[in-house]
Length: 387
Image (tube, rainbow, N blue to C red):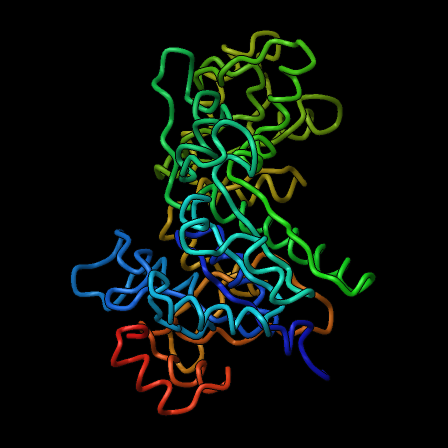
């Protein structure tokens, strides 16, 4: 292989809390040099996010989304820190930020502030609610702007009388990162045609509505949209989930028509009540509880029917197919695994994941590469510009 597609591409990750940084991570997987900008001291607050053992050296979230990156810890509230960033921007290909618009204005990080420094710069903006409108300056997280605002939170609860469902950390951020990545790559393609950079972007609101677009479009067309019914009230029993004898749940996705219905009926013992979906659900509850999941899996596979296990998180972490397909991959020189970016290119090997950096680990290397002398760097350090 001659090289990776983003070899030689410089990306500045001036973002925090998942969607923006994760888009940069995807670019790093394909060879881009990513310089992570974070404040001195404790660094990016994303480092301290919860969900880790008390004695763990860093957050698992940070381990994944900061892999392959170089850390430059600079104080952007200082004139010196902003000047360092501006020098880096002048030689960068992509600048990514999800800082709220008021913060960008305060620090001089808007597109109109940085674009004059580099006419080939792709400025990638990620916001909670979009670039214009009455809520453009409003901060948002995926639980508020992606999950709740989009209608997903209300619609996926298990029945109209159930409370709205809570989302998991990063559940909207990581898909949204792929939209931002797509915007960046589309911008790079236009730059190839025109020679000039441009402003590109995405938002949590846009991605939440896109994720829920089937229901949103139904509403826009004037058709009623209802929440998911309770499992026992599901209108399509062969697209429902059932508990097996060993306590594992199986999810079916079988069209109840024609040959598929006949094959399914034969697998589960025949004589099914196909006239009343609620009665059929109760009947399948009884049938599926008579065998372990592995037994049902073998029988349904032999019949060529579509189903899946309702995986527990410990199952996902040891999924042989995920390893074989390159979805879970090992870090360089470590037994620790991580989740790879969710696509591949023929003839392109991704970068073997390198560990996430310590705060300011690459200060000297990045600043030296930007043309600063050892005396300059010592001065920055003494003034608290870097740390």
